[in-house]
Length: 411
Image (cartoon, rainbow, N blue to C red; front, side, top):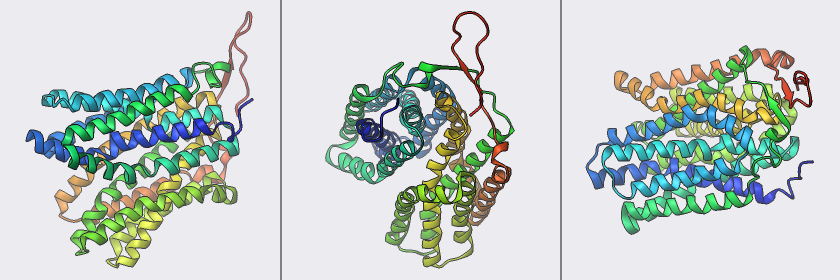
């Protein structure tokens, strides 16, 4: 029988710390590290940007493989190992390698991202908790990890100012080593409460409903990344003061936290399909209002709605999957969904950059992002009308004695 949330607090906090440090050291610190690297080496922004893009592409490519592995082996070795790999990547960067070596370090960091970001962490949560306990655990993790940029941007900046690039990388690597050790001590090992202990699952075969879900969340990620990237430049281009632009950009991230807190009550009131559809619509209102008004107050409203939806969608994605699949399949299925979603995240900056370069305006991309959000909401229409028509999964028990495996009922 699974432990309660009360008894599993060390696990929840360990997963939260692993996610926070993983996102902070490997993702949010990158822009500051890139500038410092360019100043140290003379490389261009295109060169540092290419290395980071390759890290994100590596993350996208490995997501399905890592998902299956966490289903089979649990989180201790993989997530703790991911933090250690991240530490190794940053330590190697501090040795000031050649440009090919620098790229290789970021590719290694991309592997670490796949092992420490939300996807494997949520798989462990799905293996360890049920229903309300799972939602509370996921909420705690995302609330803490949602502060990663708030913590690691100033921390990285302080490290750079105090001792330069080498010190900043050393601090980040050291934090990853600490969390790797903590994860090894606390996370369940192979065969302890994992889905792999009890079941052998058939290879996952996505159907039309799952493919539509992947498409909706992929489009939503494009909207999320594209809007976030262009917010501050858009406000500055409209003549807002840098302090105002920075404050509104911070509001976007801050609004994600109450969005996650409100997710539980809204889920109880609306159900997961209607709630997710509403969140996609709210997400699209952000770029739509930014495209149609120059009022700073309406821009604040747009950013607040966008941030609330963006934060809650992290939980909605998990809830949609665990409501349909056995815990022993969660990593596999979440990994299959994460691949294209993370690929979209890696390529969206290039796409919106092309649109701006070609038009000289932010309006085409903002209108386009609004349309993509509407398509995300439209894609869930059939599941809102008939949730029972969504995909099903088969569970296969390990054979005992002779004969074919016994096929269990879909959940």
